[in-house]
Length: 331
Image (cartoon, rainbow, N blue to C red; front, side, top):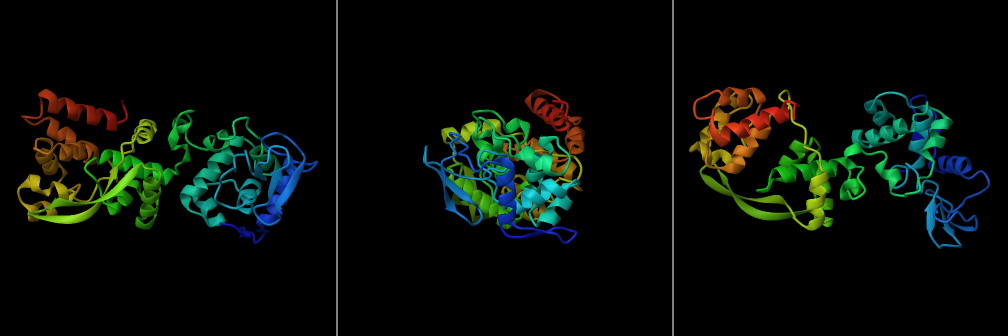
């Protein structure tokens, strides 16, 4: 996403002009290599993104190398526009820059991390180079991803959300369901899953799943349990669930057989029939269905089921109590 950026008041920020402004703030005496500090550099590109090569260490760099803007997929014009002009909510910033809400959120996180008011001081604060070049990117990510050995720092928030969905559905899940659970578009979910496959975090397989009384051949996504994937899973936060507004609208088709009637299970609506669904799945023979119920059904349904005979003692009662405690925010 490069090119001129039109602000709400009509002013335009051009990537080339912005990069020259950044270079002037960062290197008032001329470009210097971020790696070795040498001022002996050669111009590699005079168009956005401006690029130089150090004659000493032979490394290539840009005006944003080693800064909080390093590795960003949006142009310098949008960064300058945000730093100099924006002070408000993420949704407004997304509209102003013409980017997604997730991208605007990452930009806003970086701006807030400077603790500077809008203006040139905030832009200058974005350019402070960290001794660890990878820290610039980590600094604008949530705190739970800042560990030195965290491989998920190179994943976007949407990719981490998709990975969390795959973690919670070990039997496999369709891309459409990943999109719904991660709250992103289907097209974006396919892109994220493709990147996860390239990084060997996920794989797609054609499988036959129960669909009511029949079987259906579908493409399912699974985790690829490599050593790096397992390490990444340990750094992922628990994907948030809520009793209000996030309940799925129906029971996943692969669990319909537990109700012994495909047509009836397909007609069940959530959260209206959540109490009945909880009673069937929690005490049913399918462990994956039980785990889905504990994570997806409303807490009120789990609590009501917990008071019923058969659910008030033993291991099942302990599982229900743990799910209620965790999802109620007391864990």
